[in-house]
Image (cartoon, rainbow, N blue to C red; front, side, top):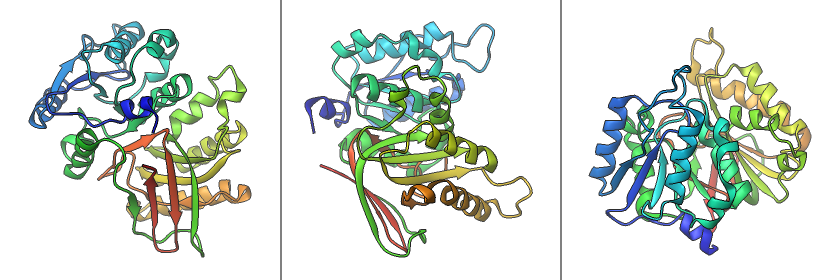
Length: 322
């Protein structure tokens, strides 16, 4: 790994100062309190950024104004006294602050571990494209995904304590291949809704295309199947899949049809059908039901690193170059 990559995915020693930011929607105050206690219990020093508990004066779904949220992210990433930055929750609003982030100031800063998922996909994508920073796609500490899920919490803690590389990720369920497949590429992606939204926000069409072999992570939550179909086709039409060597699908919590009698069964089934309908014409291999995203027991995965995706009839695995 390069020096910058080491810095962005490094292990954090006991006592490290972790800034908590809210780039999107406002976390619940009681969840912030619980997140602070959790990080302290893990031996770290949580730092609440000034607008972590703020609310937008007119738009209640935003944690403060765009300028306030952007300032917290910038200050946390540039402050040499901060060792890592952790997004308290997602929601909506990360993409709104991207034009307010200072590329020059961030290029002068030393990369540091950055954690988040869901709406934070927009920031992960921006930090990698603009600065080459590797980051952690992780459940967030002021959400039930960590506070009420011991497995997800332990995976997040492992990334903090041990850094890169994490242990390989596996899905021990039947996979949509008849013979083993093994592909290699740079790990990109995250939340489908955010990736699809960014295809319409880019001013440079070339920026929507991966220029090297890529393994694409895709997950979402509470989206109707036909909308998932539409968003996947947006990625294809925008050129995102031109160099995709393989696709790893995560959890799809609440993405079944409302009248499905067994959503736990129906969701993987309809996602599998949609994925094959979209990606089979492109001959892109697909791995199903890897443990990342909004579902239970979510793992913390590094973005921007070289990885290998193995798919066999009985299981799929994702491993990371050391």
